[in-house]
Amino acid sequence: MSFTRARGSAASAAFAVAAGAALVVLCTGCTPGTSGARGPTAAAAASQGTGSAGPSATPAPVLPARSLPSPGCTTAVAASPALDSVDTAMVGVPGAFGVAVTPNGHWVFVAGTGSVQVLRAAGSLAPVPVRSIPVTPGEPLGETISPDGRYLLAADATGAVVLSVARAEQGASGAVLGTLATPAGARGGGAIEVAVSPDDRYAFVTLEDSQRAAVFNLAKALADGFGPADYVGSIPLELAPVGITVSPDGRWLYATSEDRTLPRAGGAAAEGGTLSVISLRRAETDPAASVVATVNAGCDPVRVITSADGNDVWVTARASDDLLCFAAARLATDPAKALVAITRVGEAPVGLAAVRGGSLVVVADSNRFGRPGASADLDVVNVADALSGWPAIDGHIGSGLFPRDMTVSPTGTLYVSNFSSGQLEAVHLASIPVTRR
Picture 1: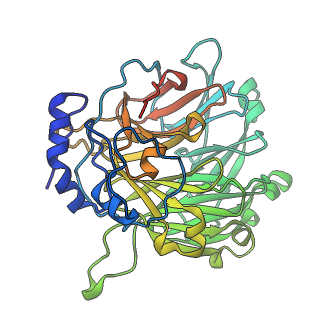
Picture 2 (picture 1 turned 180 degrees about the horizontal axis):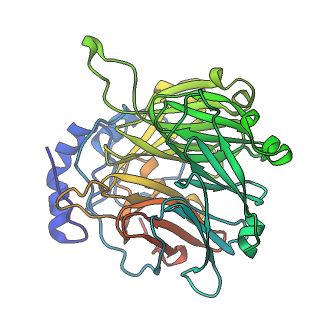
C-alpha cells in the first residue's frame, strides 16, 4: 500500500481521514496527523484505558504510561497545512551535510564536499559565508562542537577531523588540528555522526560500514598529537549505525542502527532497525562491553536526540515515516516497554531538533529517494500532543531538497542543511505560530 502526500488542502485532510484505518494497520499506535478534529488514536486510547479526551483538552507534556510496538516499514505519510508565515532564509553551501553552531550563536559551520564552510551569524537571519577550510581525508559529514566550545569535530572516513573553533573563526592558519582515525587493521569505515563526552575528553563516531561506533581519547590527541594511540576501541552495534547523541546527564550514549543482524524464525532477516543504549563511562574504558540495551526502533532509524531534561529520547524512523519517542528511564530498566509515542510525519524523515523550550520537535522530511507525489519539508510536531497519542503535526515549513541535519542556535534560529540543493536554511523559531488546542 502506498500513499502520496497532499499538503495543506481540504482534499488532503479528507484523504488523510479516509486513510486513517489503513495507517493503523500498517503501524500500530501511529497517528495519521490529519488536519481534522484532534483526539487520541484508537490504539492510544485503548492502551491508556480511556475514551476520547475531546478536542478542547490540553494534555500535559509528560511521558505516558503506555508502551507501543515498534512500527514496520510503510510509505504512508501524514498530511498537514503549510506554515507560510514562518520566516526562513537560504544560503548556498555546496554539499551541505553536517551543521553546528557555536555556543554564543555567532558562527555556523557546515560540512560538505571536502571542506568545512565557516559562516558568520550577525545582523540578519541568513548567516554570511566567510571562508572555506579544506579537510582531509576529504568527506566531512556529521558535526558537533565540544561542550567547552573550543573544538569542532566532523565525522570523516574512519573517525573525525578536529578543528580549532577560534582559528576557524579568525581565519588563522592551522585550523585543522588533526584527525582521529581507527588504526590499520581495526574494523572501521563510513564515519557519519559524532558526539563528545560532557567533560570534552572522549569522542564517539558511528561507522556506518562496520556495525561499530569508534571511541577516541580526544584529550590525549589534543595534548600529545594525533596518532593510533588515541583509539580506545569500538562499541558493537547493529547494521548501518548512524545517529548518536549523549544524554544530558552524561550517563548514556544513544545510537541508532538502520537494520538488525538478528534473524527471524526460518532464517529471514528481521524488519526494522534499533536504538542502542550505551554506558558512556564504560565506553571510555571497555567499549566492547558498554551496550546496556538494544530495542527495536522502527524501519531505518537514522537520527536521535533527547529532551533537555533527558526524560524522553526521540528517533526518526526513515522507512516508517515516523517520529518515535522512548522513555529514557525504561530504556535502562524495561527496554521492551520503552516506546511510548509514535507520530506519523512526512516522507523519509532524517534530521530532528527540539525547539521552543522542548514544546516542539522539528523533523526533516527528506524525501531523499524522490518518491512520486511526495515532497521535502520540515514538519513541526507538538510534543504534548505526541505524548498524549493525539495527531501532533501543527504544520510544515518549506525546505530545500533533502533536508538532512539540524542544529539550534541560542539566538533562536534553527539551521538545516539541505543536502541535494546545496543550501543552509535558517528558520526563525519565534515566527512558528502557536497552535491552541
